[in-house]
Length: 60
Image 1 (tube, one colour):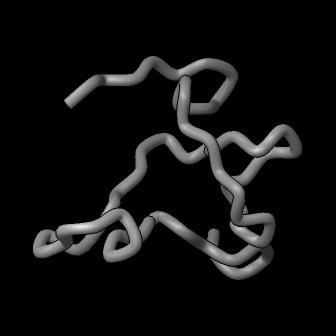
Image 2: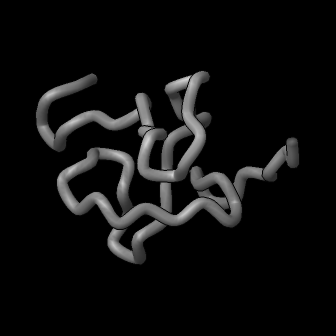
Image 3: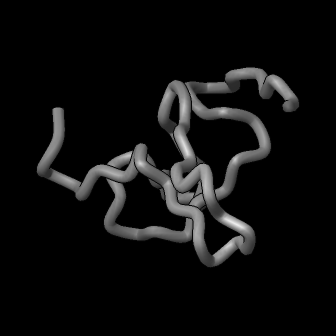
């Protein structure tokens, strides 16, 4: 697993297309300090999901 470096509060190289996630920046980058992808039984990309997701205005 690659350890990505932080840059301006963003994990370098991690994009995000979920516009209603509080961690999605205006330039579609993830600003979470870490991310967690769940479903340890996944065999395809569509079976995984970002459990770091938090709706805008919902989580602190």
